Length: 124
Image (cartoon, rainbow, N blue to C red):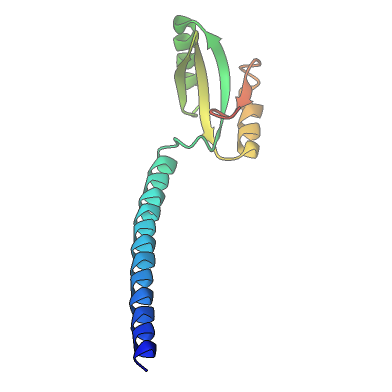
């Protein structure tokens, strides 16, 4: 009988220990998961996940890129930026969530800027 009580006590002790370890890991994982979700939301809101399309109008020197950006901003109500990717400055316009949105914008932009093309920054 004493052997049975000892085994039972050890079994309960072992079960308690294992459940504490599992709970601690689960709690730790939940904290990390919540932190990752928060970071992803921030990156998504700042458009840093590269989950979008842009239209590239120009790639070359800075002066020409600035001139083209100024002209584009005057003609269209689509946000534009100049991005430096060695060794060229690039004029990118728009921030389209889907390819369809980018294609629609490209139809209107293509009339004035025939060398423009759709890109997906950060994707190889």
